[in-house]
Image 1 (tube, one colour):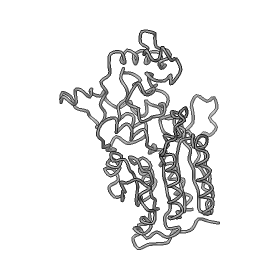
Image 2 (tube, helix red, strand yellow):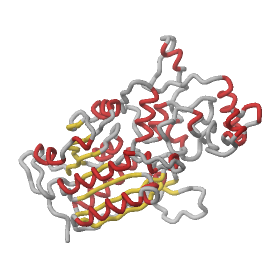
Image 3 (cartoon, helix red, strand yellow):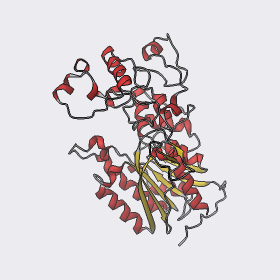
Image 4 (cartoon, helix red, strand yellow):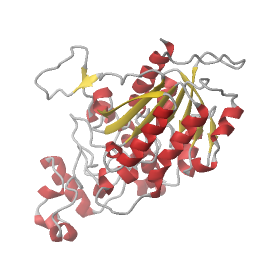
Length: 373
């Protein structure tokens, strides 16, 4: 069975249409637009993320509410969508409850159940293609919910294809693994092939592949940022919004200098520079107070990406954490992308939770090719 053809509508501008659930600050929508989609509507509950989304996607109808309070039929009626009219339903449900950072916790995150809202929208809107992105932990810690989702989607007549992908293989200058699910109404949608390869491998399997993009490729052109304290005191001005360095204590600077020279996290620190809690408990996350490397992809950018105590987020040359703008570039957002928020913590959270635009574009183009063929 082939994909259902979309019913022509009077307002159709020939672009493929999409709806973005759990839109965040707009990384997925940016990729959809770059791939030629017209994003009709998006849903995002977080106020700061919604402000960022609107600033960059003013033409998209944005519902700034909890998705559980937005009836799917409302979108269908608003855009006169019948079965097969919508080309793509995309979404990245909250994944914090399935991540490696929370796998030791026995507490259940209520956000885990939001993945069921995606299925609710599939049942009502009946898009030609479904796209879902999440952390690999959805296949292990969240297996029950993922199996439930797949069973529900298959019952609606979709053929499911999913795979865990390394985003560095798709041109993102970051080591970030993500689960991608594509489901076509009556047709299998193929996962796009890799565009880049790890240059450390002895053999490059495909001569058309390019080497992984590195931290140097992404942020080497950024000027040295001013300190946040000097910006707040109006003694300095950032060249790019949110390209401002955190003020860190002398001890933190010493740890980061050590990391730049030794290329390791807290485990390599001399006793004099170790925190008391790390001395008492040598287990835990060892990459904190580490520095990223110029000539490889960065580690996974998280919501704590501007804090050296939250991961290996030290700048490769200067004893400071990376800035929010540098983190956004490692997430493949252009420097022109406008972030709104109540502070650097809010912006860092939006950036860390986003789907990198570059990967979203590759994924969306593969879906567009299947829809048009």
